Length: 141
Image (cartoon, rainbow, N blue to C red):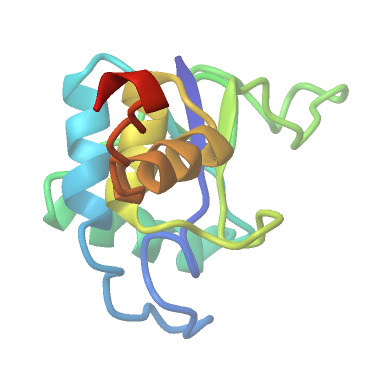
């Protein structure tokens, strides 16, 4: 699966143009997704030096993206006059998501188990429900 991942507010806390602190388990989870053979694209509003700093921050933590702000590493955005910043990804992980950014453990479960947030919440709710003993019929005393 091709997964586009935002940087500010998703991998690190919002401190733009500075780099904020890592959001707990973000890098660890992204490395696990790469290990699971997903292709990750860093998809950020950052450009130039600020983007280079974000990519280097990730590299220092052992996180290498398949591509950065483009669909594939060889894509030449300078020469391609029909270039669009809209990525062709299967999934986008972004803190601006409707409903906000779930914790990284939940994100990993959603991707690995191919389940929506609603499905995971339903399962958790069902697990929390007490098991009620069956009522005996009047003739089963």
